[in-house]
Length: 341
Image (cartoon, rainbow, N blue to C red; front, side):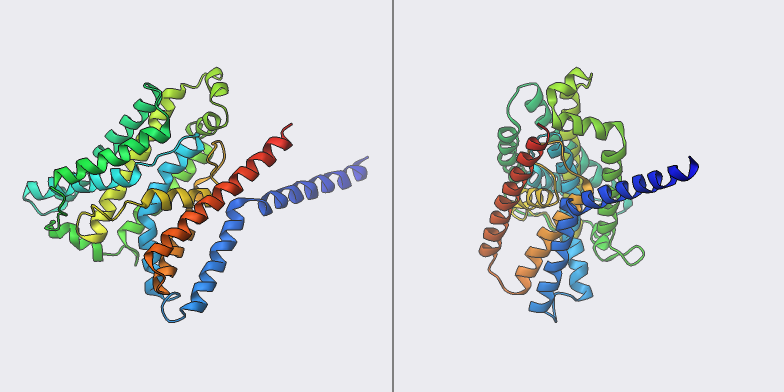
């Protein structure tokens, strides 16, 4: 009897490995990682003296760091079946509020930076809660709510500074731009920490599981005892707070506020997370997939710039890539629906 059990156990183990391998092969992040590698090779061939250099790779990571912070918050919102179009405007508002606060303090030390970070986070958190309350309590659809705040928040940011960027920032903040920790910019370290924490929380905690349940079936989540409204408010608050943090990163990166520099951030972020396998219909996606998708978007913009493609064509390409990604997401959703019948 003992000898008869061994083949069965071995067959079961092989079957599990085969099933896992099939799942891995059909995983969107795995496919997108392959696309990212191919893009890197293609741009390296087209611009061998500029694209694959260490300086440019570092620049891609720097550009991607702000988008990655935004993408973590958007990933949670979209996994729960929502959308947040206001992240770029919230970033700018937090950016401006932090800059005005630090210049008004008249000091130039570590505490000045700490206060600036706190103001940026508080501004982002406040707008995120506002979005969440409008969506859950006033029952205004997420698309309309965040589209409204996209315009309103950017308008308020311009009013705060009369439409002029602030560039006379404390030198202690500017010094962070050129500083490195273990050879890596502090901006990249912040993005790495946010991605790791966001990925772990979504994958293994009750909060993460509740996010997937809400996105899969909101009514079922209510019947399971999840306070859906409260959970959604937390998710939009998180998205807003991370947009505030991204605003501070942008301030450090460019040594000035950037009133007109983030109008298309929400397109780049949503394109990236959808490319990474996060469904617009909710219930599907990972932070790891979002990271891969964001780097595809960042690499495309960087590569197009290096090979002298006009910015207008870059916008055209990103727009059509978003449409294609959503179309593929719809096909996958229909396939899942058919398989579940």
